[in-house]
Length: 172
Image (cartoon, rainbow, N blue to C red; front, side, top):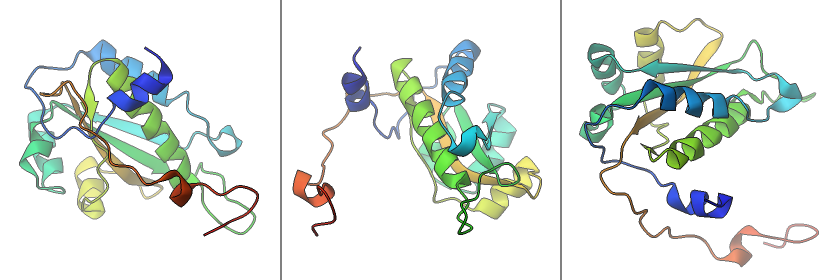
């Protein structure tokens, strides 16, 4: 499949089958995420794979949506602020780097016939407590992972080209 076909195939899945996800597929997806570029190649990410039902229920309390809890796997994408690059003006690139890795993860999942949804609207403190994260790690995103009930991506509404692209300086 071409890269462009893969990008069109990936969508935010909110309906999963109850089929278990093979551990080898999860490993392959995470190896792909680990190939993501990062500022100064510091790779400030850590992924926590959650498959145990009790732990999934505890994590789901931080984002109480029934579809979320039904995913066979939840991956907590964490950023390690003690390892991330900071720009001269102090901007911490941890979230940027984790986001690039998560994008690789979601595309690799789609390539394996799996669905994901990028979830950021969760109770971060609750996730940190449930996962017992040390202070230098931050839960950046929760990624439910599983086999989607629908294999066809819905039509994606996108902004017009002129709204998102300027040439040789901003032309708003």
